[in-house]
Every structure is written in structure tokens, then in C-alpha cells.
Image 1 (cartoon, rainbow, N blue to C red):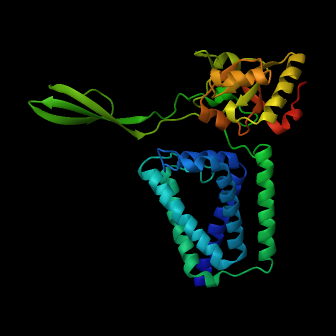
Image 2: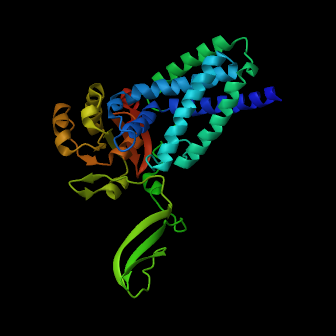
Image 3: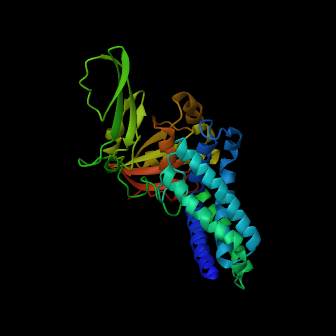
Length: 364
């Protein structure tokens, strides 16, 4: 019976670690953004780690994936179960902290592929912790495959090669709402029958010299008394469209609708122009020149201010309007900095890392 239980736990834990690792391995830059959120002053207050978020993200996703493979193959049992146990204890604490104090609304366990609420993430980790404890105390029942060492080495090399590729290009599988083929205006629509947010209102009144609280779900209570104040609590979130907080503003004016209606427009995207790759910006200069020769409209999109953008526009001859968009949204749109998008009536038809802009198809 013990062998059966261990085999069950081994398969579940191993595959979950491999799947979770591969999803994040597909998008290490996105995972680094999630780590930066955890390192922020409002969460763990570990800002000194933020500059190293990408390196930490790459190490963690490779280690997580290879650990899952090692468990499935039975390689280095003691090291594997100890590593799994320490990781899951840390993750369980982190997800509980995030859920209880409402610090991070999405743990990022499965990247953008599977969204979990903080409490769902915590209970998932609790189950994993119980399964890993079984493996820890019954590790003698974890059998080893004859090719375990070679299999682990191959898995490590493949993980390193894959993460190198997606970092220098773009995620092979795009789970975000801004993938090629997605229509941005359609992604922002809210269905008529979409669930509405539900709030609880706690109204405070002075009634006959005593403070009383009356709770409703929105209506102002019919009370004879002096109104003091009201506190609001969200009981149930309403429908949130896949694409939200997307704007294209210039000098305080929103041009989103106008740009979404253009037949064709190229968008040079830079989440933070001061952190943009210089070689990438030089390539954008060449793209802009070629686009003008082909009579194609080109604009910019960035979370940087006009003052920050000015010296870079001059240095790289980027004589175009850069529209402002929220930093988190720009990070979500594309992982490369800079990058290139092609929009046709609001639909993303091409999306390229700065290393791949030579593949842009001008004549379509």
C-alpha cells in the first residue's frame, strides 16, 4: 500500500512541478515581473532583489522543472525530496501571506495560462505539501530508473536552451490576451449579462445619541438619524474583460478608438525607454525608415513620459508620436523592450521581439 501511495504522490507532484515550471519557462520575463511585485515595498519589502528578478526567475523555473523530472525519474532522492519540501514550505507561506493580507491577487504559479486566486493558490500548495511530506518520509519507496542521470542532464540542457530562446525572442506559446490574432476592442467589451460587482455598505448613523451601523448592499437606509459615514466592502468581483486598462493617450487625450479603427499601423513598443535595448532601438530606426518608404503609419507606445522619451527619440531618429499606456499593461502586451506590433483595425497581426524585426512583413 505504501508503494502505491508514494507512486501516486510522486506522479502528481512530479507532473505538477514540470507543468508549472514549463509554463513559466515559456515566459521567464513575465515571471520576473511577478517576482518584482513580490519584492515591492507593499508586499515583502525586498527591493534590493528587484534588479536581480530576471536572473532569479530563470533559476527558479529551471530548478522547478528539473526537480519535477528528477522526482519522476527517481534521481538523487534525498536531494530531490529535501528541495521539494523546502520549496513548497516557502511557497505555502508566500501564498498564505498574499491571500490573508490580500497582497498579490495572482500568485503566478502557472503564469498566464491558469489564473488562480490567492486562496486557491494557498490550498493548492497545502495539498502539495501533504503529498511531498509523504514522499519525504517514504522516500525509500521512490524507485530509480536506470537512465535517471542522463534524463536529468538532458532535461537541464533542454530547459537552458529553451529559456535562452524565448528570452531572446518571444514566448513560443502566448497565453496573454494580446496574442497574435486577438482583437483589442473585442477584448475590452463587457457582455450585457456579465456578473456585476457586489458590495456591502456599512452605514453609520447617530440615532438618539448612539452610533449605529446599518448594513445594506447598496441602497441608502431609511433611518431617522444623523448620517456619520459609510464603509464599503467588495463581496464579489464583477466581470473583468480580458483586456482592461488599455489606453493610447497623447497630451491628455485618449486616441484609443481612433487608432483601433486604422486599417494598418505599426507600433513601436517600449515599456520603459530608459531600459530599452540600444541595439533594438537602432533596429526600430531602420524599421521606421522602411515603413515610411512603404507609406505605412508608425506610432509609439510607452509608459515613459515625454521628457524621458525626448532624448531617445532624437538619438535614434524616432520622429513619431509616442502614446502613453499603463506600465503593467505595456508589460503584458509584449515582453521585449523594445518590440514591434502591427495592428489592423485593432487586431494584432504581427508581434516581434527586437531581435526578429527583420522578419516584419511590409507587403501583405
